[in-house]
Length: 364
Image (cartoon, rainbow, N blue to C red; front, side, top):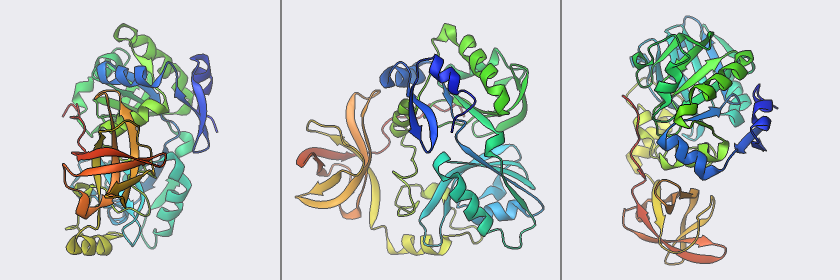
């Protein structure tokens, strides 16, 4: 599958790969250059592969609250909540953003690889709720403009004072390049920025106008490679890595987004029990002391005993260190614990550190 911007990516000499069935650029100029551009100025991402599921009807608020772990009853209209969607056993179906348009209208933004699975899961749990559920992914294009200069750049081609869109809020009536867009102050990089939703036919024009408006700020198009290193440095989870059907939100350190005190939700009973009994595993951060880059699924060792596995590992372009996230036995999760990462059959020294690798630069 291809997004509306496929030809733009080819023209910009993007290196195209297969990602969840989509032909998308993993990089243009280079991962580190693109990563640093977002941290220092601003970068533009094509994220039209993401999924959008619309829930409308009298019971929309009650239903969304039932299928996700966060509490949307506390949301204002035009506010966004990050949440997990869980199975009955507490394992994670997906993580998502829930956009509350009104009590009777929600938009759920889900991961590209999980669209069909999520839509099926949501339909299976519809039961007697008075709602309509629609997978509108094909009729929605999405861009992300991220970085400290994002607001200044987007203001140039927008009819709206973007400073009025606060963190995790949105405006559905923004004109960008004279095209109607939903614009939210959200993102997946740890930087300030916006996610822009619009008709796919509008994407090429908006994409090119944003790149043009950002020329004086040295804006760059950004590929999936830097998208991953940016989210990882900001300790933002990726499905299939830090979260999955075999990992609970509590194990992943996402308890803040699990409201165990709200009315029943799918997975609540299992998560309450897990919290009461104590976590057997925890997600930790670590820094390599020996040479080598940790990669996903590498074994984590303590005194030659396997205590867990790496979920994500990279050379951090911002910190200039080899760091990683790992799911480990809780008995070995204390900061300062010396561990080994098994890299190509060799145990390489590492140390558990805070998984808050760097401060997020959100404008709140």
